Amino acid sequence: MSFADHSAGEESFAARIETERLGPESFRAVLVMITSQGGEDGVLRIPLAGEHPTALEARFAAKLAIEAMGRLPNAR
Image (cartoon, rainbow, N blue to C red; front, side, top):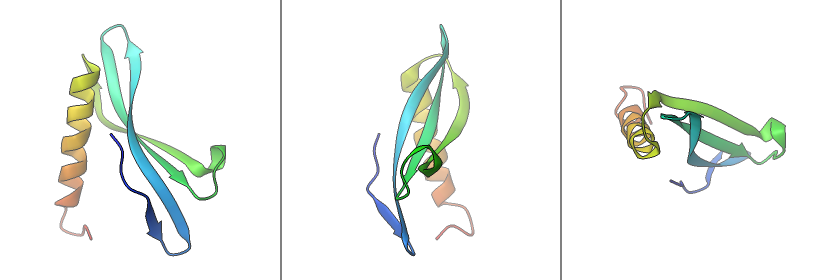
């Protein structure tokens, strides 16, 4: 799952969702943000929505978590 590039002031970043295998039947989705700095210092990996038995379920839970963030009272 990918998102468009964004800009926040002088800093720009791209974001995407990746799925990590934690065990034989355990996956989690991770929000990966890559800043204009690049390199290891420019990459943030934020786990979303805990562990799930399949990669598909992990991605679906991440999608719901991102949608919920957009409904927060102070979301812009």
